[in-house]
Length: 174
Image (cartoon, rainbow, N blue to C red; front, side):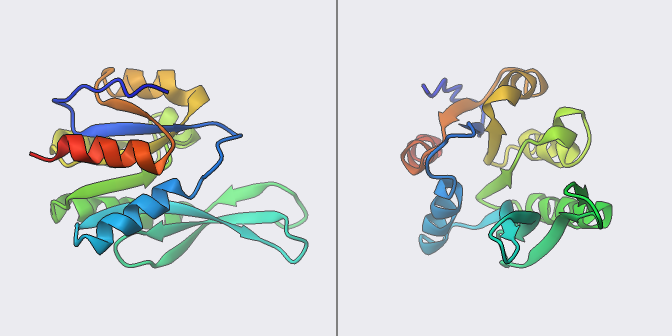
């Protein structure tokens, strides 16, 4: 996927598909920036698994502290997972703090169904953009048109790879 780079915009969509190879690329990129003493904040996601190695939930990971917040867990007697609204509120606070601290980069995994419908972290995502703080957000390929509409078709569109993230980051440097 080409990097349609709008160099005046300080944000990028890291687009992935269900068959995207290295879904850890965002985490690896964040860890690399942290070793370079960059101030990175935001929220990544981590699947949790049961003893049968079946996914049974989702944690949000506070990039700055490493703290894990259970955001989705199975509903009893069901294979469906339920979003914990209070946990979602905690994730919004993580992003608000990153904006307040004017970090070098905010990462958000992901532009999910709630955000696509104007809920979830959408206010914090757009506030990060408005504040001019670099933002890297993972976006499912199917949701790319919605992302582009919400972001005014600005920003870069990247393939989901460490190399693409690093190239984008280098292009942001003065």
